[in-house]
Every structure is written in structure tokens, then in C-alpha cells.
Length: 200
Image (cartoon, rainbow, N blue to C red; front, top):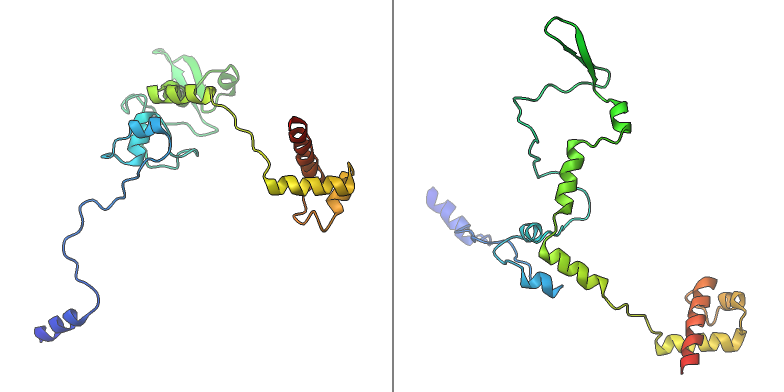
């Protein structure tokens, strides 16, 4: 009985699972910035590398997965209050010292910051050497302007020859304005073409 089952397994096209590969995750190759590539550690994951370098791999806010450590010990923590609740602090003789509200708007309007704000402020002020180098590099970056292609120059030249400075007529021209460029877009392209003609 058991032999028939083994024969059926051997005839099957599905391979039997032997030993799994130890490292199946794909190690990313850094092809972007040379500063980042020089400090990249291939033994770490992408998220670990970015965290070590002081970068972020997600520009959106966190969606979970990272547990926040409490700023104070849980023994000292008092149960949180609901929206319509208050806590009364009393002296030893029973007289009321103060009343603590759950959402004290007076405290918020005075500009007092909460523990969460302080935690985010300290995490954002920490800058690594790589981040400083990247900031310096972008501060002195040369802006490259887009030059018009030969085909675009020819197209604009034909529009100007046919319509002159009548941009509305250029906009409505079905033969030349086949991409349905707007009046403002045609104006910008003609202006750039005229500037390039003046330089030449």
C-alpha cells in the first residue's frame, strides 16, 4: 500500500522540499549616490542601513511595527482619563489641592509641548555626517536647464512663421498643434525659442 504512494510521488512534477536556502532575501545594490554607496553595509538590510546612515526609506508616517518605549516607568503611570473625566489631588487633611483634567485646553494654548513632541524633536535634530555631506552637495548643485530638441525648435519655428504672435491661433491650429498644447505652454516654448535665436 505504501509503495504505490511513493511511486505516485516520484511520478509527480512537483519537486519535494529538501533543504531551504539560508539567505533568500535580495541584497540591494546601491547604484544611486556615491556617498551612500561608500558607507553601505551589505550585511544589513535596506531599513537597517538607512537607519544607521540617518536617512529614511519611507517618506510617509510610520504605520506600525516599531514599538515606542515609554518615557516614564509603568509603575509611576496613573490610569488615563476619559474626555469628560478629571482627577482630584487632595492633601492629607482632605482639602482639594488641584483638579487635573483629561484634555486641559488651557495647558495646550500656553504652548506647552507634550512628551511626544519632545521625542520627535530630538530624533529629527540628530544628523549624521552623511546627511551633512548630502546637504552640502545639494546646496552647491548646478541647475541644468532643459534645452529644446531640434524637432521642438522646428515645430515652434513653423508655428511662428504661420501665426506670428497670435498664440490663440497657434492653440487652435489642428495641423501643427497635434498634441493640443495650451496657450501658456506654447508661449513659454516660443519665448525660449526666441531667446535661443537671439544668442545664436
